[in-house]
Length: 304
Image (cartoon, rainbow, N blue to C red; front, top):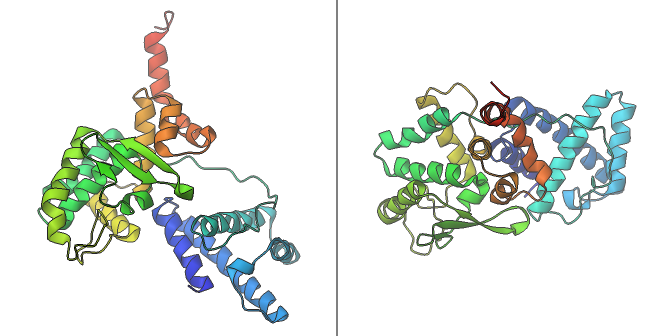
């Protein structure tokens, strides 16, 4: 895969998997293409073939120096470094490179926006849409949406599921998160029933090859991509009349927010989401302040 293609793969990842806005994704595109041009220029000076695997800390520092010499504002520099850090983290996770040249690069802290969640009612309206259609693809989408909201899985984890990863008897799914770390997530009966119907009735109609192990298939009988699923979610959001920007990651955010609002403890939600650090999960507590306030008013003996 070319260097530009790897950047494009990352940009697709942050849009579909991470739910970045179109503006942020476009800014990252410009930042990474600029870094790509710098790498190509430096490689040409050294008589080397440009590749991300050979991009080291020395070259990263050279890129930062180049930004300073060209007079970029500190906030712009910080964003470009943030783009680089996210990109190389992606490459390492995907096994495209072994070293992260940004690991020891210090940059100003950039404010982190709160994840966007939708309400329980909006979620219900979204999940209802494929039930209105009778196509095999819609029946597949029912199972995917129900599974995504029932488990809080990342979309990459969802489309990566293979036959045998869901235990229908015990009611849980086995998925592999970042770094191929395995975790087991329980599935409620509604999602399990929808999944069983898809597996028994719909998947055989989509499958063209007995050796295909992917759970969720497209109309060609191949593993559905995260891009394909993102497109379907956008269509259902439009049918549901949801004016907010909906991505597959929106359901992950909503799962976490609704679980905490419903009384789940932070550690349990951390384990379900597959977060390595509790601080990553704690961001969702900011989204449940109304629930906390209502609980306070209801529970405190002096509250009126």
